[in-house]
Length: 393
Image (cartoon, rainbow, N blue to C red; front, side):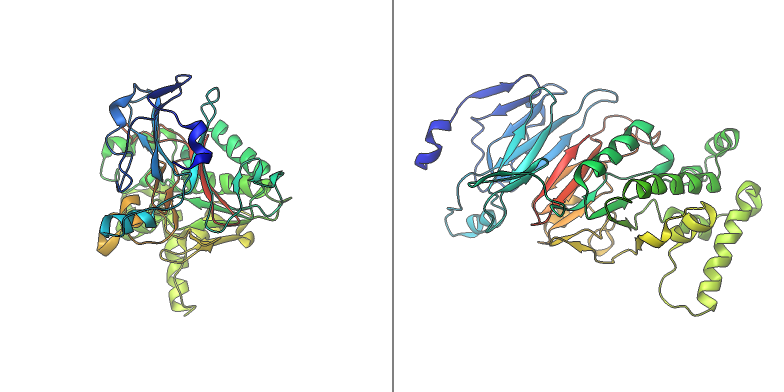
């Protein structure tokens, strides 16, 4: 071992106040592709697992409904690359991370601290740390803040307030939203379920009401950034596109409550095509402004599917639902692309290679998630040098 680290070496297993369990003796081989694999059952529900490994990794282990989940994380290395130059060694060297895991055993906060290539230190939420000491945060430290999937109609008030507080604390240059629309009243998954449709009728839920809730949540965020000059990005996502599916497949003659909104959206789309404006028609942007009465469309970038959004060297334009060659997307699949990416979609925060995935913002109980779940309320912070962290709320 390097002499500088010898005084700090530990072995055995260390309990971190019941919040996490550090398995210092796990002896994960340095070439393991996914170092946290297999450790889910090592601790009881609610007690996270940390294993020493040469790669940074994180995921949330599933728990029964209403039971506490647990985080399974790998630390990264404090030493430089030193691999046998064969296939496994060469591949392991690519994903070698200089980093550490910070754990607050009282609040249960956990964050990775990664030192990027050619960097002299690392960022954390409260500033920058280096051999020269600590400095307080600067205005341009946080390049982007991606919230967990929004799902406005399911938004819990406390979660919205906490998200806005995070903006006020970090003052990010860019804010990214995924799945701002849940489209719960006429989602294609339930459109043929008469019991579900009846329940929506009794509750007074309509497409217009969905869109008004979306506009309200977006405008709440827009109001929060007026003093910071942040740019808002809406990344086109599968739930956002549910309104497009509804317009293609609905038999509106059997749905009079939504007829007017349906025809207004149809007319807007047809006029866009006939007037030859060119390019795709972003239905969510139109619906936010024309149906939801949103008033901040002029400061929001509504991005299209497959539109690249690169910030601080990280691709942020991929929601995560579209995989390779028409398959369903997944963080592990994207990790094989060799591109640094921030994604959403799964509601299960994770770090796999260069792919960081946010959780959800709205709620951990959205009616359609039944049984054991690995969902968590969590957001992604990307710093100016490309360093990233998952922030659990």
